[in-house]
Image (cartoon, helix red, strand yellow):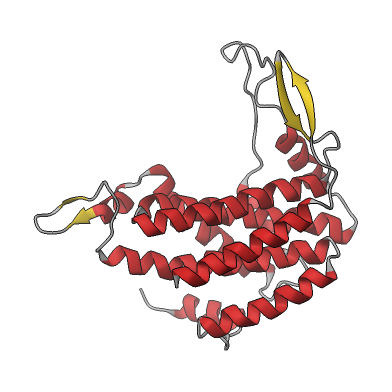
Length: 263
């Protein structure tokens, strides 16, 4: 399965490079006494490219963590990948709909805000960056017309995924205790190779590599890269065949099962 993940990551990165070239590159500018790269035109498109850069980097990093058995850290990265994909869909919708909502405008203002208003003195900087509640992003992407789930269930699904991996980010006890075991029992602090956790997280990783592929397909569609999109559709079929996942149950049916499943 790792080899398939590598193939997916390589394809996504190749497509990203072509998407990256559709947006004017950052300029080398002055901030305080430093020279840094910044996008002079703080557009939605440039924001999508930056979020895609983190998505590609995150998928590549997840390969390293999985190979070395650092599944706690991988769980935290899954949470980040969730948000990267959500943000990309949210931003792409503004481009596709031709409408930058007030929520999009606020998001972009915060996204492009400098971390330090006094670059030469971190201590004297206010560092007053605020964030948009994740539930507002969930609500926005759940209302995208092409979604197969109704907005209410879609929003709850996003919330559930976010919360499921939150414990890895904040080191909640129940998540930390997944590191404990063996003979004699101990905390595995140098990776968990040779434990059942590897198979579990390899299975979960498939979802994120596949989701990354779907996300870059949405970006290709949004940026009107028809040739790339055609190639990605063919590659997606290949991935599904290699994974033995060519038949899919409708999302509404899956959610209905989850709602009726006994505790």
